[in-house]
Length: 182
Image (tube, rainbow, N blue to C red; front, side, top):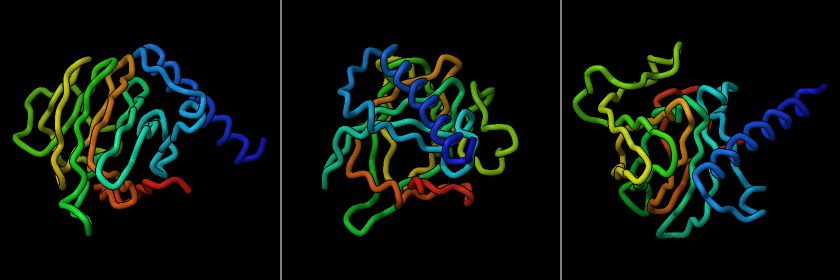
């Protein structure tokens, strides 16, 4: 089995697991949306620990709407949405649809946190103010705010509503990360 075939096989497995989470959350997707799921491993090749699966419904000059699927205990790494030529940076609201999401943002560090960065990558995480989102709860992250998030043990689905998304402009704390897939 060649490397590309193995990568494709892993992609299909992760995509299938994400689709199962969308189904558990009652998120109805079209065939086109199912086929277009992005599986982001951030160039770290450890998708089940650090990664994100997503569908973009709309991304115009003014608004963006996405569904994010996180596998059980999967972490989306620390990043921020900096000032862009056309605005102060992306503003996004996360609304939990399924599972539990542990969101970490700038602010006073939470004592006795519920979740921690992936083992071995702790140096790449610097913000620890904890916001726990359960289904129906939401939180808005303002432009240029460092944040990261992790699913609980059953995985999670998050609806993201934001200003225009330009993933290639995201700044990650971990300089090994590449956001846009190759």
